[in-house]
Every structure is written in structure tokens, then in C-alpha cells.
Image (cartoon, helix red, strand yellow):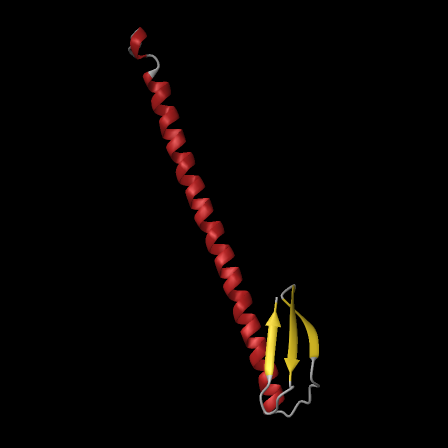
Length: 102
């Protein structure tokens, strides 16, 4: 048969359960914040890699495919729901400056 707790021990179980629940909540919050941080870091990295590859594409089109972009050429490109603005500066040939912003 179950033993009844004494009057001075009746709050120990409640306090223990509350401490365990609070510990689990703290662990859950830390795991969620780490995951959110990792997702934002990976998203930022993916955007910068996409911008770099877009700049390389315009570079190859300009130098090796002889695409004639005029000086001050700008274009907006949609990739994966994000807009990348490409601007090409050909003011000092043979140098070309390609800027991609997102």
C-alpha cells in the first residue's frame, strides 16, 4: 500500500517536478535558438554564393562569349524568390566591374 507523505514533505514532489520541467524548457529554448541561428547563417551564405555565381556568369558572358553590355548596364534577376541587382561598369576597358547586390 502507498505510504502517505508527511506534512513537511508534501511540497518536495511538486518542487522536483517544477525544477525538471524548467530544465527541460531551458534545454528546448536553447536547441530552438541554435537551430534558428544556423538557418539564418546558412541562408545568408547561400545568398552570397548565389551572388558570386551570378557575377561569374556575367563575367564569362562578357569576356568569353563577347556579350556587349553597355557601360552602366543594370539588371534585376529573380532567383529562388530573391531579387539580385546586377550592375556592370565598363568605363575603363579592358577592366570590367560587376556588382551584385541582394
